[in-house]
Image 1 (cartoon, rainbow, N blue to C red):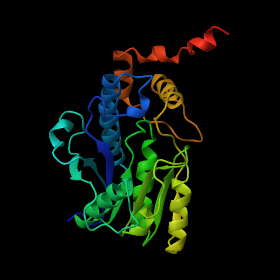
Image 2 (tube, rainbow, N blue to C red):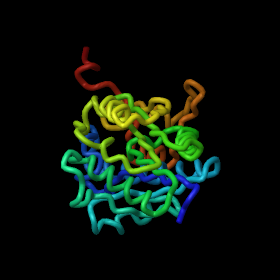
Image 3 (cartoon, helix red, strand yellow):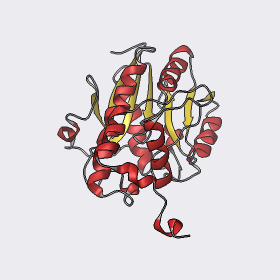
Image 4 (tube, one colour):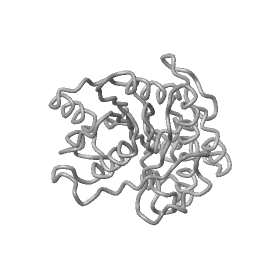
Length: 255
């Protein structure tokens, strides 16, 4: 039992070429995208461990598919547990696609006895550590609320709760710009208090990748928030020479 603690489960696939961060190919090669994915996992789980110094947090990897457990070896912070989150057969009919994995992860963490549980994306290695601590403290200090970390693209990077609310994952057009708004609507339907965290960004396209490279070169506080340094990501970027991607596209250079 882990009563009085908050679990944060990172929704992740094992880093494999051709299966990891495919939306970054191009400009990356599949092998580069997989290496970057592995670095993200290291930094995100280390970030959760850092946040646990300010709040009672345990970090997990909510992974898929089954059988890929060993592929995470060497890529996670010490003490990070694994939790299978593939969506069980008894899911509500209106929970589909990625929503089944998210719901399965929340169910699994709360079933372990945690007072609260959050699902966290695997695309934001520079997310400020204080945001993770804030999410956990909000959930643990209030009797019932939903915590939402909205992403700049209209999705969310974090969703946390104290009880399983399957409706929060129902009838959602996943991977669209309406995800956060739909989640807000579901929260209102359930008459739950919604607490929103500062907005952050996902690294899922060239523009976001360039922004990430800037942040890992020289993290700059914005609106009082200090980006996580993401040292593993910074090292991977340098090792693979990805900072050359900051050059303008050929058609722009010729203008």
